Image (tube, rainbow, N blue to C red):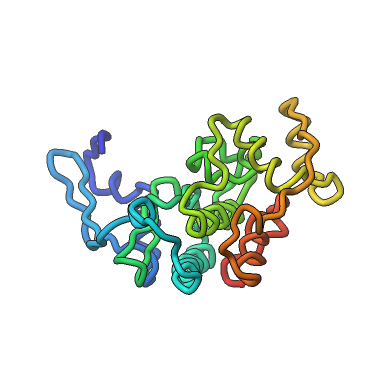
Length: 243
């Protein structure tokens, strides 16, 4: 870390340290110790073999659906615990999910984590573009834990496909890619989204949804239903992690 910390008080005020001190769960990475040497902080985490991106990139065949179910279940357990304890992650992506093979997965990298009770507006840059929820792309400053659920829906699709679902090249292209697959959001279904779009002079392109089974063709009925629920345009309609 580049920043220098003159005192332990400064160091322990860091978001990541605060979050990890509060969040002890089998599916959340453990912070073993924090070492301050010459005013520089070093984090020592429990050892995990690889991250989810590394697990996917070397595969030459699809994961069995039972494996995907187990991975998503464990991530949801970690997220539910985090959300229940007043935090949301804000940077869910395959590189931030640590794995020991497919059997054990843990959520890592809490550098962007926010306490749910901390007051909006949240204006700082969050989440890697491909996993960014539409409300963030539309510059909402009052988003909340449903952004983690959207990102997990994208990760779930990627586990089935072994490639990203929405690989946008810019924020605008990201929105276009989402519309191409999910269809134009209905104004009655998500009025806040249309208000956000109007505020930034963005007009949703008109497009019907693409049947997801033609894109993610290895998903069973239950997996598809969960994934589609997590990627609802309206954040209030996405399931919470505990569900």
